[in-house]
Every structure is written in structure tokens, then in C-alpha cells.
Length: 535
Image 1 (cartoon, rainbow, N blue to C red):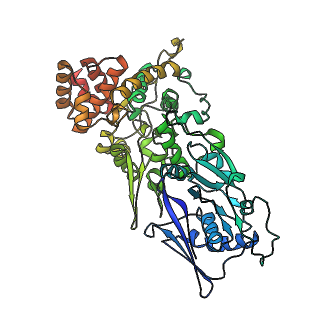
Image 2 (image 1 turned 180 degrees about the vertical axis):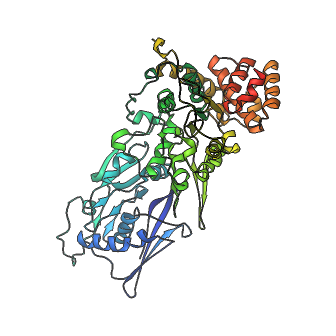
Image 3 (image 1 turned 135 degrees about the vertical axis):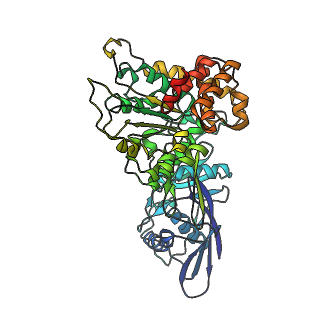
């Protein structure tokens, strides 16, 4: 006898449809799973056998072959258990599933037949919805996550016994030839979101509570707040450089308070990443609507930063997708780890290749970093501040971890001096005021790039950059002279141009003027000596 059901697995952060084929034939009773299964999938035979027996069904005493197709794709995890069990029960004639709807089956079985939740349900359900499936059958604990998507019916199963509308079956005699014919799974149904392609997904979610931090907590430092507003408006990478205690970390940690919320498409994209990484609790937040903020410790490994493993999982750069990745005390990270940021910063994705597969994770984030000017932190300071005690060799050794190509990919290098006259700042600039400016610039960009497949100035490149970042003649002359005097690379030139476009958007200017270019160049602090020759 032959039967086929549908399940799914994760491939990177996306769901992949898997056909679970079951064939029963005469021969010595034995069970084989084929189709490149990993250890967890091969062990499903023992879990399924015990669950079927303990729920009062009969495990087929025949030669059983279970194929997971496509057979050339590596399968991992425990999400196939339920589909394999139902495939055996339907092929042996013990259960007849409804034939009036296409059903995707996901779930891990315990030995007594109870269903355990699995990770990555959201991308799998999204896959089923896009492939025209009518319903999904998932463990009860995964129902809240599955129901975040509209347009598909969600059935929750807590125990294999619940397949029978009559309830428990563990006391049934194994000699009984009763067949369970399920005309419908409505007794398992937990609900269906109404399908409305014109309503945003955000309408189905609970918004995360607003953070308590606010830029009004930071007295003074208005020029740094201006730089952070520009960075947030165009999603430009930013580096804050200054002695300890000037508020670098405090300023960057409040960056999420001025970022606009995720759009409905971005919200689903980010939530799928967190679901696949087992870092998502739908009962607390619903779909993620606030932009992520990730701040890994400087001891992080390369795999932890960009992703990795025998079957790769997303790293911090992907968990920060559409949000902020904060690297505090940048030179404390190893050079090898920092150099891994080059590809994500340039291509907005990470590709990890293994011998049998290649995985691509999205990684479009705002990189925010902070560092001291030297190991002791007081290079260039004057009394009454502490005097730097570092030798030129130690300073060079401290800074050598930051390569030129990496610094080229950071749009803004901003000096954060010790604040002065902060006592006189009676009305410090608040997050609400800064966010209004950011949202105004965001709307300009969304309208400008509505047919370009991008949404922020930082994503401009090539012909689109020349088309949308038009310079006033005076601005063009200033940028050309700065390029020659500073010895900029072409990448740095383009980043100054994109930064100028964002500054113009904040001012509501359709054309980039000389003042916008001048301000953008001033944020290249690491080229300050050459700047002093110009301004």
C-alpha cells in the first residue's frame, strides 16, 4: 500500500515543502527512512512506533519504506514525526483523512503520542499558504504562531488520540479492525484568520510596548543627536569615537526609539528569522513590529556573528535584519570576526556554503559602533581631563583591527567629545522630536523609490544613485575637491553622496546643495586632518 502526505522543513529561514511517501509491502518487518535524513529524522521511527502503539493503533508488521522527497535535500529536525505517523496510519487503513482539503502536517511526537512544538512554524505555514494549501495541522503549542498569518485554516493537535472525535483510544483492542474516517478536522480547529489581501499583517499583531529609554535622558550632545537622526533616516552605518564616559553607548542604545516601525512585509520577514532561530514567542508579541536591536559581546565567534553550524542557522547580522547591530568597543572584537562584516554590509545578505548545500540569510541592518581613540581612551585630551599614557605603538596596535575596507563601509565617523554646558540644556532633544524628523524623511524615500525595489537612501547604488542623488553645481565642485584632498575611495565617495541625499531629505530639499555635502563630509572624522585643510 502507498500513501503520501505533505510536511515541511526549514532551509535557512525559509520553509521547504517535503512529500512524505509511505510504502507498505510484504517482507521481513523492518522500517527504513530514505531521502537524506539526519539523526533526528532517522530516530523518528522509534518515536512514531511507540506513539502509535501507546495510542491503541497498530504499527504495520510489514516492510515499510518512508521517502522524504525531494530526496537530494538534507532533512533535519523532528517536524516530520506527525506526518510519518499519519502516513503509516492512512497507508495501513486505520485512519482516513479528509480528502476535501490540502493539508500540511507538522509536529514532533513523544512516546505516549503527545505533540511537542517545533521551531520555524511561521515560515512553514507561510510556505503552505503560498502553495495553495487549505489548512495546516500543528501541535497545540504552535497554534498561536501559525495563526499570525491569514488566509489559511489552522488545526491544533495536542495528542494523537485527538484524531478520533470520540477521544481516547489507548484501551482499544489491537485486534479490532475499526477504521477512523475523518470527514473533517473541525473538532481540532482553533480558528481561521479572514483573508484580506488589502489589510496589513500588522493588524493581526500585538505591538511591543515602547521602550523606557528616551533621548531626553541625554543632556547636551545635540550634534551627536543630529548625526544619529541622519543615520536613522537613511539607515546609514555610524561610528561614535570618543573618550570613556561621554555617552557613546547611551546614545546608540536609544537609537531604536527614533526608528519607524516595521512595515507589514518587513514584520513578516523579521518574524520568520526569529521563528527559524527559535527566538520567537508569539504569545508575548505577535508578529514583531519593532525594529530589532542586537548588541553581541566582543567575545562572539565568527559563526555567531554571521551564522554557521553543520546545518547553518542565522547569526547576529541576520537577527538584526531591518534593525540595528550594535558593536560596542569595536577594537575589542577580533579582526577575523570584524572582516566577516564586509559582505553583509555591502550585499545585505550572508551566503554560507557547505558541501551539500548553500544557505542565504538576509542581513540588511544599520551598523552602529563605538570605540575609544586609544587603549586608555584619552588620546588627544587636555587638562583637566586625564592625559593619554599610550605609546604610538600601542595606539597603532589598537587601531589595526579596523581595516580600511571595513571603515569605508561605515558612512559616518562621528567624534563624541566630553559634553560641556550640559547643565544649561533645559529642554533636551527628545526621541519623539527626532522620530518625527526621521519619519518625514522616510516617507520621502518610500515615495521616491516606490518602483525601484528599495526603500532607503543607503540602498542606492550604480545608476540609481546617480539618478536620485543629483547635485547642485556648487555641491558637485565641493565633493570633487574633497575627493581629491581626502584621498577618498570610490566607495567612500558614494557613501558621502548617499549621506548627502539623506540630509537633503531631512531638509525637504529636492536637490543636494553644497551645505548638505559639507555636513556629510564633516561626519568623516577619521579623515579630519585632510578636512581641516579644506574647511
